[in-house]
Picture 1 (cartoon, rainbow, N blue to C red):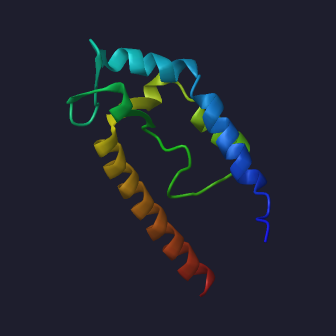
Picture 2 (picture 1 turned 180 degrees about the vertical axis):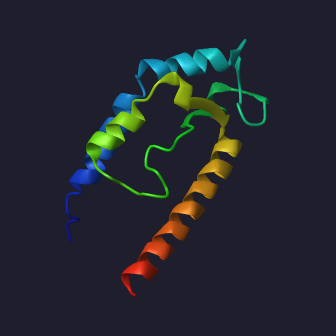
Length: 116
């Protein structure tokens, strides 16, 4: 059986691919560079480029509110450099885990409110 086309997912993917070339994203990587290594903003350790990721300090999709619309998503994805930081994959994974937990808690709360 053929899987249904997911337009929303396709748009998210396209925007993320374009974001890789966003000027402030590149600038924050240059700012974190120490010789041939990059400094993690959380643990301050140095890592190869393959082990660092650019992270949004203020989440692209607010875990307390959820997805609002593409205008908001684009505005928050293509943000100024002040809202970006370089994290090693280990710190980024820990931060993401925390955000996912917050998002799940918020969904449960909303679900309970609807069922009342």
